[in-house]
Length: 398
Image (cartoon, rainbow, N blue to C red; front, top):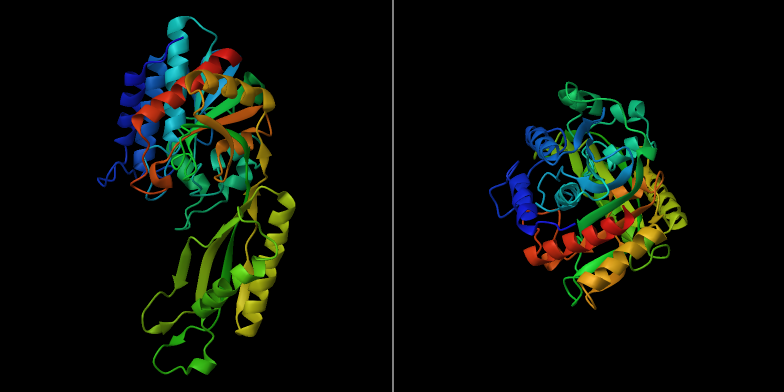
């Protein structure tokens, strides 16, 4: 089969128009938003035009089915609140083009998927997490976004489109093409990364509660300032983790909600996200204990109460050896001496999929190592090369 690079890029740019930020090539297309729903309906029409059977499951995961049993290719098409145009979307449109080319050539069928809420508006890679059975739909329905909206309420917007969950054994394996979202490929002469493994991730919310009070009349030594609790926790965290982590371990406080969030009021409560990633499950558990202990210690020292939310996450995952080999062989043919094996520091739907079928991933460079930002980009020649490598592997595996 022969993929059509011009058609592939045209569809990729069209998808970018849904939720276009107006700043560079950035998009604002969070899960279940108007832009997300409109993009899914457009994508469903493109899948149908390609001769695939369209299916939405109860969560809004969108499948384009090429046969009774086939290789599955895809990713996600939702974005961060300020997202890039390629994150996830690249893998979905690559799957569409390869499935379309297979149909045109009369080759073995290929199916396509765009998973819902990979970016974690409600959970962690929610769509594939539920479909793979790691989390039940009932559990996921109780997840809330930062505004308190439940997943059950959000997915209700798609209720008229959805059908039952598809069985896992309908697919022989899963391939996901993605931008690297880091600097390694961009800072080298390599243009293709064959992923060896994906790190594990843990994510939770922590709240410190103190005493809301007047900012002008409450002496400093009498304050129970919730934000000062967060500040102290953050200042001590790096040192407490120093003996546990490795140079590739990362941790982030990325979202903070302050109450009452007023300039003349001593904050009475702060709730913040706490996320950490590593390729070793035991180390992730050690980090969890350090974080819990430090939060409790900080609360005690400052006269605060602490609430530790549930820890959600995905285990570290090794890619399937057979699927990796197919990608390696194709990379050697299409990008000789310009590819490498590498780990993924970012989380992907492939992490969940590995629990129900063989999976593998392919990376292309991210310019400047930038992702989850409006200026995320990749040279179009690298996008097309990645498509060709993925198509070669898919043809060998299908």
